[in-house]
Figure 1 (spheres, rainbow, N blue to C red):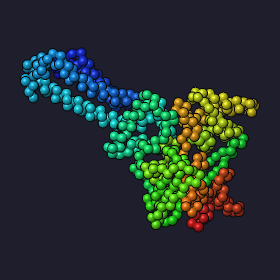
Figure 2: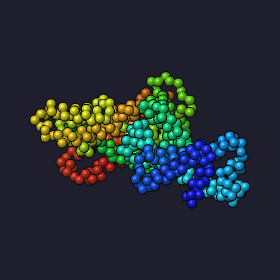
Figure 3: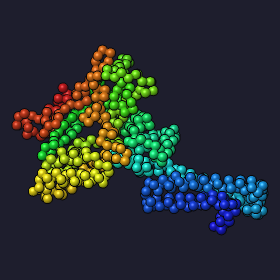
Figure 4: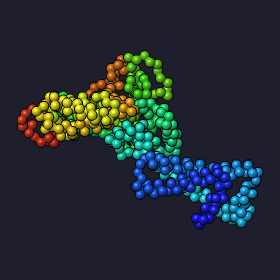
Length: 496
């Protein structure tokens, strides 16, 4: 069997070009099979190896198959012989038999053709499956995608594949994504991409096709209690609590709620100054009677945009960083203190941690050195008698601060603090106030309400306890179980 195959290979290789084609076909096939076995066994896991296996080897295989008939065509032109004469010259009269279907050559070619189709089919399926994996998206172009891969792994959607949001379903979406991916490969190869990479607002699939597979307005109801802990810059890094009762209802039955904007019964459209969607030209909403009410930004004099530049509001207009979340330095430090990764017993640790993480370091190595040097210098200078007993806590704090820096800062892609702002809420960025501000007014001079109670009730705001505005005044009430207090006081206030 092997000898017959080798004889066939030698016969097919009419000249040097033909031998190149046979070598490409054979080596790419053998390499593909070996690496495929290695990947199935878990021995090979690197994304770059997968890129070679599922992209390079199949291309070489097809290239080799194309070269072989080209070599025969060249030989026919050079010698003036017909294909029949070349076949008989290579395989002999007994192997060709007039090129009949029962000939040895025909059977061999048919078997190899079938094998080629199966190989290419399996390779194509495996290639598509591999290219749909999060590991491929995040690591195949490491220098470009490293920031997105880093933030993705720490996000609430870390178990959702990239293609669920960036590709969508259907053959059209698949073809568009591969064409876009081909251009991205060209951009990465020839260094044509921007730094930092702009948010792909036009390439994202509609939220109705992605986000609302898991989250849909009909299931947003009631309220959700949320407490945020921040820390002061004093020597004790004193905790401060802000507790909000978020109204997540879409606004059914006349109630207000943060998801009113995406309720199927409502429609909110807007035009923004640019793709960053940070400043609105005008905002309009459909009223219950079917009419449209428009609010225009009185501070701007830009022209009214074309119809194709208008946008109907959906999930990503507020949740614009639902997965690739870049933190603000103060909030990131507060979270590490809350989790215990930064020990609050170190005096002024919150202030010094924020100062350290904001340093302008050119690389991760420089950040590690600078953050450590800054903290150690401060405590040696301010607390020389105690610093020797605090080194374990300082080391722990340094590690946590370096993690914050490494997640959010990527000098190679020119990503610094604030490069990708989140529009969720309004504490760190304009967020809600992009529309809910008094510069955007309708024809009668009225503005979109900026009343805090539209979206949440405030139960504490920078207070020493999470429920400061609900705490009972008398001692007897103060000693009641919290669940009884919430039942009798808090829930009653909501009903009122």
